[in-house]
Image (cartoon, rainbow, N blue to C red; front, side, top):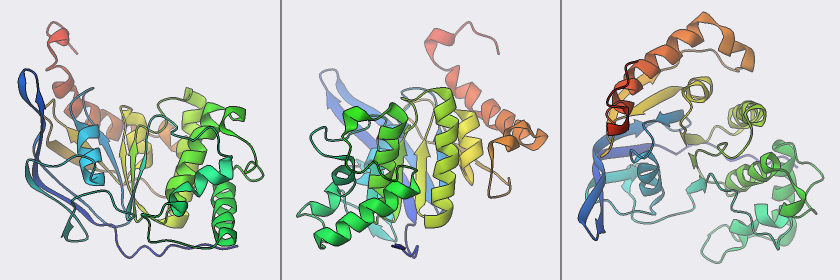
Length: 275
């Protein structure tokens, strides 16, 4: 079965956004005056100091967090809550242990809140298609406890693509797997993205991962975070892991690190560190 989701939308605009939360010590501001535009079909990676607020901004784009000031727009329309045009992939695998792999993939399609109501046969076809796309053909009848960590995250990615969402919001999706699996999964994600051409906003702590995957890399400031600088990544596509050994890749990685380093060193624990 061939399943295609035409990429005709997926533009994201973050306009002068501030996000704050009440605490026992008063209001805490995680994001302040952040502005960012992501083109439809673009792969944007976001890097920043640990705890700076980059994941908070990602959740706000999904509609999970309200903004205090500013606006977040998807295809020109202000968002107010999660909708089927956006799908999240979290660090944790988020699979339902009592459901098979295939039924985890199609779970969002079964929810009454989604407008994509369809027959059981079609849902199963979608599960088979995306499990094959992520390299898990034949694993549909298994349960999450029978899978490795990398395989579980593949299921999560298949589920996100299967929703038909125009925008995938990925919060360090490979953080819980080993380095070798992480490299392979990054390459697999690029292969799938090249076929589907969804808009992807990918939060990561790894500069190397960001440069390898993305069309552009956004560097965030120390918290309260905002966008400090955006780097174009003019590496050819399709990409393979060998490109990481090139001089051009090394130069891009170093440029992103130089921008990010000043923000990392703002953490008081690094006050005496010289880099």
